[in-house]
Image (cartoon, rainbow, N blue to C red; front, top):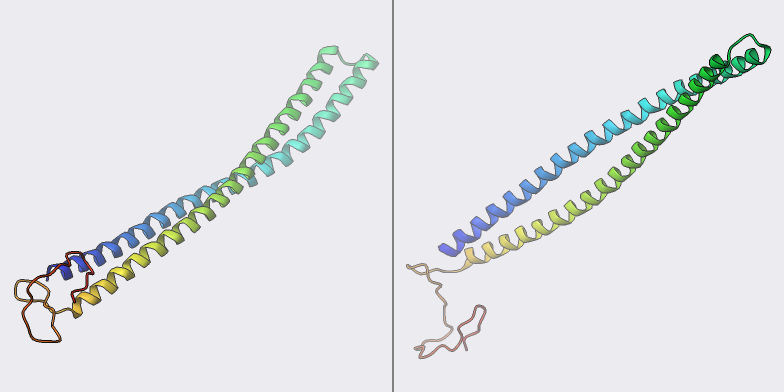
Length: 178
């Protein structure tokens, strides 16, 4: 029966579509999880570097203060004082850059989590839609299995009374012949 074969093919394609959608979602999900892990590792690394820079900033501050005092006492040149202030300023700038980079990475993690949740909900809705289509195809296939088909594959309809059909005005699917 051609209609039955067509419905069975639809069932197969529907199941394949659902399986493909799951595979794509899982693959994308793994990629997002790897990116999330990379960003979280970067945040931790930047945090450790920030701590080191803070310690370095405190040391360069002390050096700049000592260089200023020594310069005021005439024991250090103005160049030595300027070099110490320059190192302190550079360390301060590097710390600010690290803090900005860490905030950017944290924002990227937040955005990635929100996007992941949205994609998960989108996939669940798509999966639900495909499952509904698959179930509808199963129902139609089951209905076709119960139909009686003639030798040429045409549908045989049993009449409740004997007689000859002279004319049929119904030509659309689902039409009722009285």
